[in-house]
Length: 233
Image 1 (tube, rainbow, N blue to C red):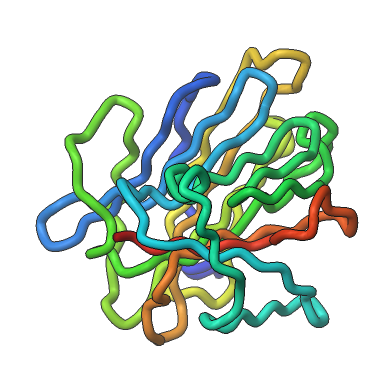
Image 2 (cartoon, rainbow, N blue to C red; image 1 turned 45 degrees about the horizontal axis):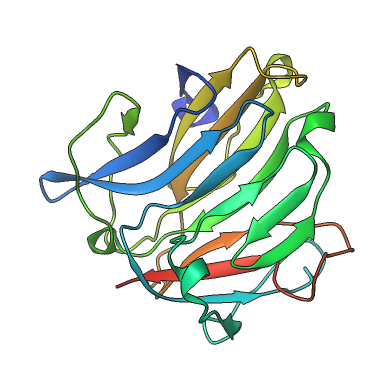
């Protein structure tokens, strides 16, 4: 007989192109908004840790070793251009396959061509105290996530043609919460889903930055990064 841990319950939300969706978790009596994303009419997806302001940013690229990626907090190049700092860590995944992040332009498989569910990025969050609380709006999703002081929170973001959406189970995690957002009526793009999976597992220190980590094709449009980290002021 299967145990309860073999099952994952996902909340499903209907969304429209242009909706700015924010995700919040409870921390000490307040909802802390830690993540946001929006999907454009053409399926382009824009996202980032939800900061009201940031103190600094780093960007860098690294090759995975046998499917594993290790990043040192000291790695990366400082981003000093005020224009990109003012974007507060926004990363855009365009339907064309172009990725814009911290002044870098890179390539991935075009979103308009995907036929199966695939990972878009992974996010490593700073401690909840680094994120602001706010009034809850109509497009906000508040997840009753069981915060654990000793276990940093991550998110996995996936995109799929709507009919190919699969609920993701993170192996060996301590807890996870899945939210699936459905988008219909896009321009020249099949109906899509965006799945955000919050999870935590091993005990450890909270990172000094929030990281957005994503894969790219070998060819970049410049010599900048395929991963970036931001820290709040």
